[in-house]
Length: 487
Length: 151
Image 1 (cartoon, chains in turn blue, cyan):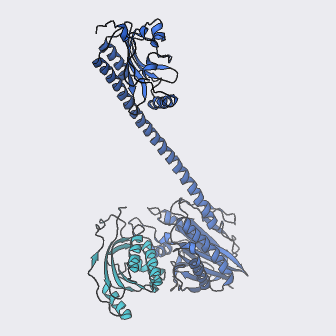
Image 2 (cartoon, chains in turn orange, brown; image 1 turned 135 degrees about the vertical axis):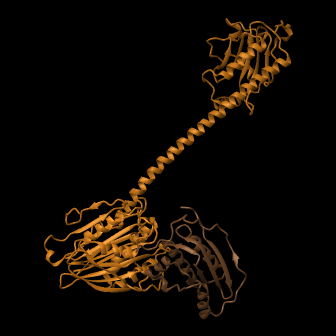
Image 3 (cartoon, each protein chain N blue to C red; image 1 turned 120 degrees about the vertical axis):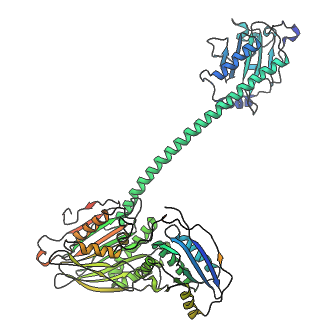
């Protein structure tokens, strides 16, 4: 492109108005930061624009510059080796970004402002300068695409439009780059958020499990008491470590050698069921002090559950009984049922194994659902060599390999098949082994409570033991009973 | 576990009686729907309710809980709840928990209707049968089959 020497009258730059105040400049700088382009490494797309400009306009130097607060930074430069930025001296780029449209200085020495710019006055000796602003869609001029020559020259309207198109291409490239950056950042944020959520979920899960097992421990007797002349054993497991189970049991003294026991199951799980379990245990313990009949104790529980507005529609099934020592070293047992599966009585057979008898208590209704609930009881004698096993439906609803439930008949059959004695510890151990031998995990909580009277010849032989397995996790953790024997 | 839902067919009769036929499997997921549907009928004025469970092929303790909720609501409105064609497992649960004392169970819907008429007078048929929700029947074997007790 031949450079023509401009007429002196054309010495002044063609510029638009200069509206830029401090506020506009602050907003402009914010836009510069938004594109996050300052001090980024060289980039082929921008380098091509500067090279293209130099070739199109046949000039020695073409640049793509971004104007920062205190410097003019070269994103790309063709014909300017080793220069990455210059100061914001007025006259060239710094002034060009103040103009609405393109800036043309045919002869910098004839321009009153540009003539003192270092690029003009210094060793580079710039005489011709033209620039098109890189303008964002919201009107901020980030910088310019510049062409410089060491000779004065003029530039046509069409050429200026080409320069403006190059500036528009630069902006498109910056927009593309920005959206790619945003996509990457969003993805990174998403990954970080996912990671945070995972970490939080794991923390929550752990604290929930810890909370559940702590709560569980408060809902269960820490250890069974030592009842003279009686062996006790229990087992407790929840279907999942995250859940507080709704099963409960307890054995406690009433004074005068009388004892009370209960075992039951609140429908549902979680905090609400735990609240019912808690209320149930305290109510039963309290009512046991005031009533002679177990039916009356269950009736008191029924009333308490129905009265408690916060309980809502929660109810439970329950076995509640009193124990009184009998003359033969055994106990007279009176048990009332609140709609609970029957306990099993076992009589040790001389040749090993035991006779099994379900303790059916007809007519008892689940507790806490209906005001008119009626309860009935049965009284029987538990003599030496005899045991009583109580359980919740987690045992009867445990599934066999073929998917069928164990059921009451399955429990009875398992008890009849046993060859061991009818003592409480062996009963609970065998029942736990049965559950753990099943192919599927139990779908519900399981609570087991067994009582047995040691055979006559054994009384005083190896003392009394109370065994407890209490755990809130599916894998039972054995605890040593008060007797100090590890079971 | 394939998600499934219950299908309901309702026949309403004069004398505030509704016969609700339930099809599907009543478990932890679907039991609330049964309760909601029955309570809705109660709100619409059918305080006497007969549940025909003949097409129910599975019902666990969640179903029992729903029935208890329905019965409690019926009692509040001076109504009744009767069951027809109760599945075995539910029947055992009702007996075990003593709830069967409060909810008469009949061999089939016709027997339940006759028993209701004997107590409350004959029920004249109201509007025609309305199918409320047509849903796909549960896939065979999609869920836990009704568990029979082990021998």
